[in-house]
Amino acid sequence: MTDKRRSLLWRILLPAFPLLCGLIALSVGRMGVTPADIFKSVLGHITGGELPSGLIEKTLWNVRLPRIVLAMLVGAGLSASGCAFQSLFSNPLATPDTLGVASGASFGAALGILIGLPLLGTEAMAMLFGVCAVLLTAVAGRGRGGLSGVVLAGIMMGSLFNALVSFVKYTADTDTQLPAITYWLMGSLGAANWRELALGAPPIVCGVAVLLLLRWRLNLLPLSDEEAKAAGVNIRLLRIVTITAATLTTASCVSMCGQVGWVGLLVPHICRMKFGSNHLRLLPASVFLGAGFLVVVDTVARTATASDIPISILTAMVGAPFFIFLMRRSEGWQL
Amino acid sequence: MKLTAENASFSYKRGGPVIRDLNFTAESGEVTAILGPNGAGKTTLVKCLMGFLRWTAGRSLLDGRDVREIPEREFLSRVSYVPQARGGMLALTAEDMILLGVTGRIGVFSTPGEEERRVVRELAESLGIAGLLPKKCTEMSGGEAQMVLIARALASKPELLILDEPESNLDFRNQLIVLETLSRLAEDGMAVIFNTHYPEHALTRASKALLLEKSGRTVAGPVGEVVTEENIRSAFGVEAAIREFEGGQFGILPLRLTGENE
Image (cartoon, rainbow over the protein chains, first blue to last red):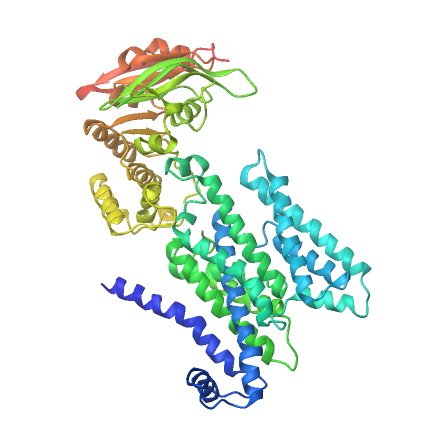
């Protein structure tokens, strides 16, 4: 009975966490917005009553909210993809970037900036090259090696695209393009707006939804081909669907806000330590915790100093020590 | 239920035949043991029987139907497989691990519900491992892990169970637990085929045996005719003594190399 009650409690707490973080994040920032203003604005929109001042309205709905929504989507997407890849490759160190998607996307974005594309064009390039990198990995890794062949091909493809990024940086104009590329690569959610979200959110939402629907079957991914087959599961198809969902999700995340490291590694492992390895509970927990986590980190990124701190710096600075702390406290690496 | 191999042969793309002209039948209520030295193709044979590898010649029949004509789903719902318990177990609990065995019977996007959990609980009770259900597989002993894998294979309610070296790497007590389980499953009407390194387990537990030799030659038949000092000498290259103990138990002791091997 207590078990059931505890599970019910988590079922309420976990979805509440990102919402609560989002609500707090709405009222935090250089522009002072009180919770009362938020309440007044929401009420005003529903009943058609009085609204807060125009500036507060604009800050709330066109600056902060899209940014918070983006943080939630990216946090949830990267966590879910990381979780799926760790199971797929039976490797606790697998990240959403294991197959080279983030490196490919970075190259796409750097190239987009180099040839002077507008923001949306740059993002489209990032998405395109992210998917391309994984396709190349899949083609290169096919054959005898099985999954470890694919992982090796992913590492090769990642370093190839990283070299290409360096090449683009080398040829870029040092006054304008190089800083833009460097800043983009470090990751920021500062460019969030509704138009961008309308394009970038659907792949993330679809990818995460597919992974969530398949969450029971993700448990089968670490089994050998024979074991999975004997359990009546088409493991090849399951692997392809998982890779596709995780790749589209990650590519879209990276294309909208650059490389955000650590989330895909940190969040699933925190959840593993608390909720165990069954993806039935692990994946939803990772999605919610990831969403909330990135909202918190991004809020710190935009409020800690006068200008935005690149988010990958913060995730690594928070992530690495926290991760080591957790690892030493618990039983260590486990899938 | 009857699984028959008819003139079945298998060879890998490069290299000679691993299995040549195999003929045997496994039936409900019977235990069939597969014996042979390392590298003779015991695991390969199991994979061929499961349909993971295709016979290069000949065929297997399930109740008289060519296995290649039976849809994979149907075949795998009647025949189940227990792999060798390897090191890399998952950190799932035994209950979740056994539940994985029912995955093939629930929808792609569904998750196992109360009904499936009840089946798993009953199954675990009948195998005497109900106490293991909340335990993580990574924290189990070899014997416990093997029983969980057997339970996982039984979760799909098969008519034929094929096991790959189920009692290797286990201590005496756990060997007996696994072997008793196999005997009981056969008594309850299941067909059981298992690979083993121990000829005495074949003699004691099985009614039929298959002896694979490195040359690809196979000897099949009633266990008493297959597991003889003569056949062991030719297949394993050792002189062995077979002794019967009370209660139909057998002991086999390898005495010395014959010098004919290799």
